[in-house]
Image (tube, rainbow, N blue to C red; front, side):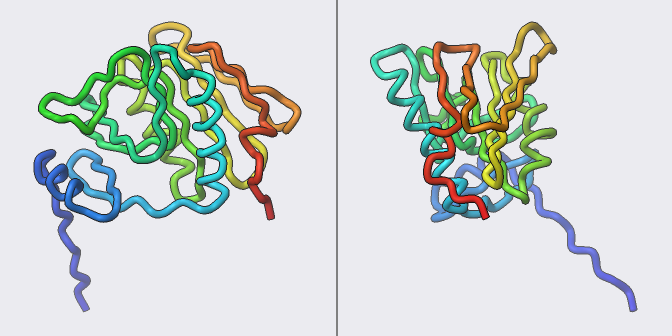
Length: 192
């Protein structure tokens, strides 16, 4: 018996954007491939929401914009459209040319890790984010246990790494004046 190999279909940016704008679900675009984004768990949504709410409140009336889950980001050097869990932009929004719904200038990105995306978020996605000139800080929040990883750009191609694993610890961002207790990030997050 001969196995049939299904050929992958590759899409242009324009095909993806037309499809995405008319779709009830969200999809990422990675160098020609369209990938369905699965829905988040209650823990995922709670942790992302807690982090977003604290940032949004702390940065009110300052030259920052904070977005949660549905803000599309374009990474031109890697040909990726994605939806980070939390994004902070400093100053005016820079949009992809010809678009009013796709930003290109994140300062801080936070992702809540899930089993299916954990490796991608830590490796390939982080490598893609690092190609964005304005990107300075990356926060990875584990939804299954108390564990937060923080990466901060200190120089060209140089990042510092800090990890937190105690609810009594405080995450202090480096690119803006903001701190949050891990107990607040994990408020109402239920571990099995």
